[in-house]
Image (cartoon, rainbow, N blue to C red; front, top):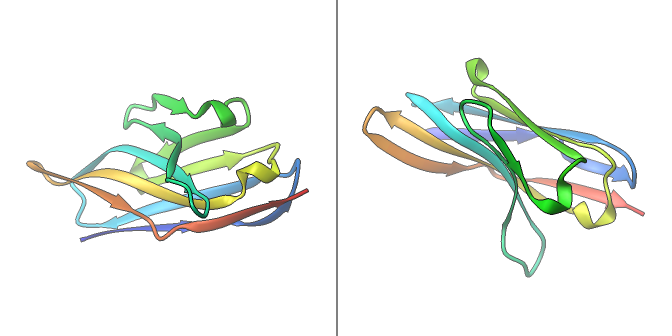
Length: 120
């Protein structure tokens, strides 16, 4: 079993910053991609940013230049630095990981979500 535990959400004023963290633990052989997604009520979950095990990244157009994803492979942890936050960034943010639990078994896991609220 693998657990993803997120932290760092909260309430911030527009223009402010927050840093989200997500630590993976449990039965992990290795982790491929890790990413952050977000969801608002009535909408589908959308990709915010993704990072490969080698450090390649991609971002949603709406966050390019403002958000930075990074990871510490030794700690099985992924981060999302969010700067210049806007009210439209308000959402529940979820961490996701593509995990090899053993060499031949690959599963996707999600965190429980952390609320980010940006006030205008």
